[in-house]
Length: 358
Image 1: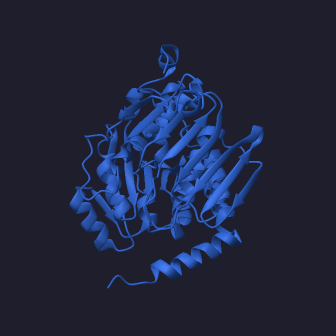
Image 2: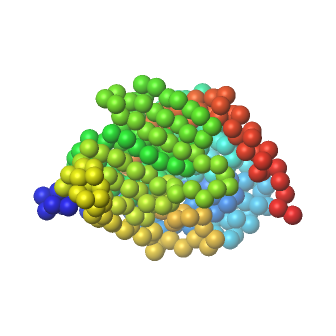
């Protein structure tokens, strides 16, 4: 990479909300009392992470089973527990609710919290369909509270770095995005490069999605069969270079930027690949989550952004806005109802998931 290009590569980017001047970095200390709605596994991991946020207090937990809520509260030293969701969201000791229940009931729980005047962070997939999502946002808008779709990927420093590198023009015009994982994660990756506007067209096969945008730009997205060994990376391919969100790209701790003197490098420079500039963003060591999902400590980045944004009076985080959320949800719904997709998933379930390992 030539020195001029290297100088353009941003390092250690600020979170988008801070970088845009919308919030202040120190407002991670803005005090918020969290109520946890649902005492399952994702709530357990969220509590471990959010407690590392300077301004956060976990004040209450609710579950359908009051004994389960009480046990959860005792385990984590939470002051209040409830066997009734409505009772918890009405509590004067709660400012914001983390909804960690199953997707089938998340709509009701987000609306319940919003109607009680509480801000909400809802674990993905946020809703089961576009209609539910719009009902949830409508309730939050009416109550003038935050309803944040918990697309935690967008808050990882490596993703913030990728966004800033794209904006800097270091890889030129982004012409293609390649990604593999679930439909929700891969579609949101395309939006980082191409924005939240609707693609001109979308085609779906069993395991792939192709989004076509104006000016011959495209996103080629793979949703590999499960179980399988897939790479799980995201590539932003530009006219001057390439950005890679390294595995696991839905919660990445590393980014690689390649900017050769000429593109394509292998054909313009004696089959020599572009030099790789790799940047590491280790998961925060302030968070310890026993038996965590991969890089789940990164929940902290999302929590800190919520604190900063609410301190500034914002009702959404710019990393993943309501517009972004609805675009992803709309496109995922189109994928799910595609006949080729349905037939493909049916075959996979019959071949792999119906077989007992014993």
